[in-house]
Amino acid sequence: MKFAIIAAGEGSRLAEEGISTPKPLIPLDGMPMIERLVRIFAANAAEEIVIIVNRLRPETEQFVRHLGQTHPEWNLRLEVATTPSSMHSFARIAPLLAGAPFCLTTVDTIFREADFRNYIAAFRSALEAGLDGLMAVTDFIDDESPLYIGTDNALNIDGFYDKREPRFRFISGGIYALSPRALDTLRRCMAEGQSRMRNFQRGLIADGQVVDRVAAGQTVEIVLEETPFYAEMGGQDSDAGVIRAPGGDFEVVDVQRPVPGLVVHTVRAEGELAVGDEVQAVVDAFHRQGSCQAHSATHILHAALRQLVGPTATQAGSYNKPGYLRFDFGATHGLSEQLVCEIECLSSSILPL
Image 1 (spheres, rainbow, N blue to C red):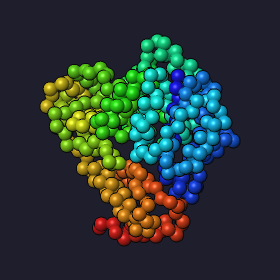
Image 2: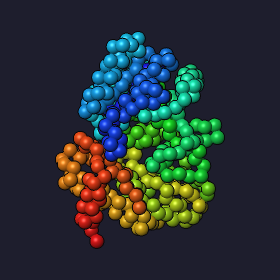
Image 3: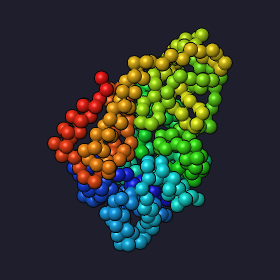
Image 4: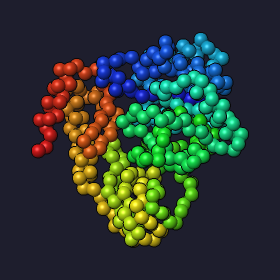
């Protein structure tokens, strides 16, 4: 069994706090996070440990190379690249994972060693039982945009959701133990232009059961012949609203585009719906306006950053929803309190009235 670590992020949020140390080298339990993971993987009988690090952070590359030279028995395989997302990093190292079951995680995933040992043992048993994967989940939710896990009573995963529902007990723990067949799904997702790990996870269960009728009380995914709903993309949250059918109303809680041309609405059923029903799709205009305003604000903030910080302040990601925005960027240095104030003032001065 192989293990893999994605450690190719830019560490933009740490830089915002004035921390110059690359994230993989931040100490945890007395040692750099990346070394802690490597040691835990080696203790769980790793045949190989594949690591991808950011080309722009040579300190991390040097550290990993030193680890490999000091401990040749760990069989470290290093990939050095700058990628736009974790999923692109995964795709970059996928050829090194082919041919064997593997466990993949990001460098900042934290867990107890005993829990991880039990998890890997359970995955090996699952493989013997003919299953293709085992997802590590947690009920500790401390994330601005968690991925909620839908399960049946036997804890088989039946869906991944961006919005919370009462029935959801867990979110993704960021650890993926998978059979080699999962790499076929990864290649398909990349070919379709997907760039988020959560859409890869949705792809893993894309061949799930299709039903022709929905009863009240269920949370389901439906597809319309045409739709006015905006699917989450470009950092902007999806539309909210309601789908009105002859058998009742269906609250739209999430909208995704898993593949080009396919828009999937996650709805909470308050009535009955059948294939072929004629429905009315009503977008919550207030919610959309709030998302659009937040999205526009990220462009204004980016312009202010480029003007005051310089051309190195390049966007690395964003997330926008009504009343909230997050803007990730890379820069060669941290921001002083004075510079933060100047950025805020400039952004406010160019906000449209």
